[in-house]
Length: 174
Image 1 (spheres, rainbow, N blue to C red):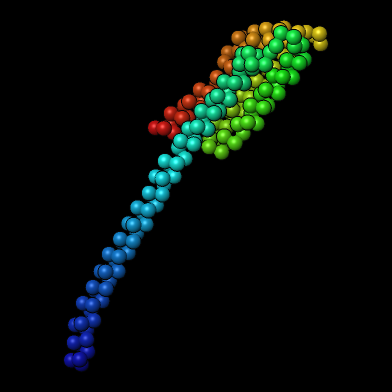
Image 2 (image 1 turned 30 degrees about the vertical axis):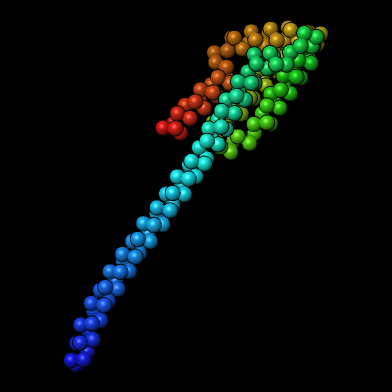
């Protein structure tokens, strides 16, 4: 019996030391794992944020490039018919959109919807104005009528989308 008590005197403190060591090591490993996770998260943010900002910049540029004024300035030539200009304007919007499709990866769903809606509204506006002109109309007439329609809008769809993107960027950047 005395041997058993002697063994308990040795075993219980050893068990307490082992349990304490296990708790300390577990805590250290947990803290180290958490620190590594936070470092990885910080590194990801440092890597993704510039790419995300660049995506938003490109989308704002896209929206500026598909405004009717900008499209007309880049596309219209004095010798174009209304049908030719109409086709060139729609092709310009499509081309710009396809060039920037990959940017949606870095944007929120709501922001990308605003971009798609702006593009769709610009295309609808161009199509509607072009359909109001006779087949023999000139590109200059289409340009003039399109710019008049834009001036009558309460807010251009591209400007609405740009404002939304700016507000979203302000939220993201804190």
